[in-house]
Length: 135
Image (cartoon, rainbow, N blue to C red; front, side, top):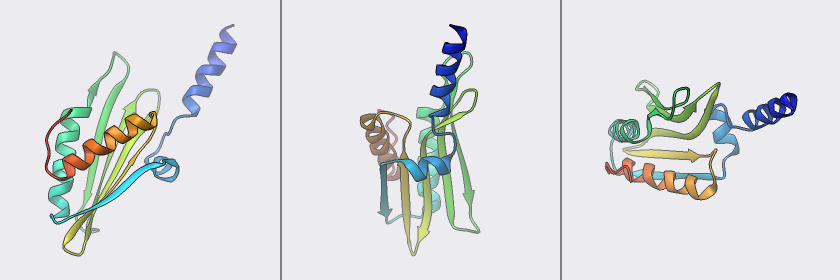
């Protein structure tokens, strides 16, 4: 019985998206928007609100993480949202880049039912436009 439970637990964990690149390559829930704003300001707005709204502990061993890295010399920034458990399970990846005088925002969501991915995608688009609502 223990072996069967261990097998199914391992099967469940291995079926999860464990890297941001895997999320980008496999998700069907993605969207790219263009904004008449500085890409650094858009990056900052998304990262700040995402950390406030999404990051934090779920229970004793699991927590949600929001991490970002801005590459000024390459003119883009990356933001990842994932559940940190035995290994990370990625839920969203955002790439904010400079496109001429505009910001290009590519949003990828996954690891959830499609309706939840779409809801998260809508939230991130709102944050990219300067919104601060967690709801």
